[in-house]
Amino acid sequence: MGFCSASLVLPNFTFAAPAINTAPSADVAPYVVAAAHEPHLSAAQMTSLIRHHIKYVFVIYQENRSFDSYFGTYPGADGLYSQPASATAGFTQPITNVDGSTGTIQPFLIGPAQYAADTDDIDHSHPLTTAKMDVVNGAALMDHFALTEEKKYSKTGNPSLLAKQFGELSMAYEDCDTVPILWNYASRFTLFDHVFEDMTGP
Image 1: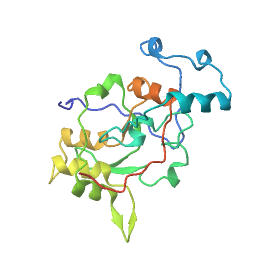
Image 2: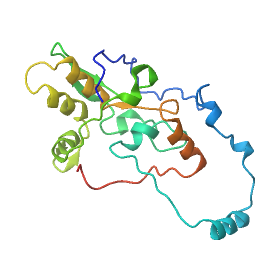
Image 3: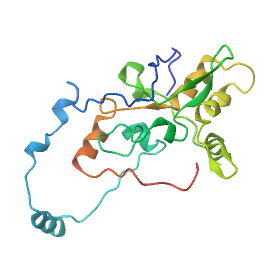
């Protein structure tokens, strides 16, 4: 899948958490079952049902995507805006503009208007993931995701528009309107927001 050649339209960034509307859009609403329609069971009833009816447990991992990419704004999850930006390593990242000037970028919502379902994958190889982490004196600063993606596509000189777009993509996240099925699973089952992988890249 290719990456759109038009420049991404980024919002004005602030350190405040954006207003999050958890109501599904008109396109998603027909596939959502309201919690009010679920049966109300006691803990004993739930335990009995689990012991007698559950034979398998499925754990869904989304390959090559961070938790924050899909669930960073999920209500109640420990995600993008759970703490102040100043307390979140890498929340603000340097990025090089196509004219050579240095700018910054923070997490931004990429949605259907930017064809988020068709955007390319950022690099998750071992060498580039390590470079993105930017480990200094044993501490991961987590602040070179955008720059590392840019340099992959424009190794010298000013970045091309394509390179800058990949740098921007590394800071994008989706919400319930872009990945409604995953958010529906999270609302109906269990969402793990503190599962960490200690392996960097394939």
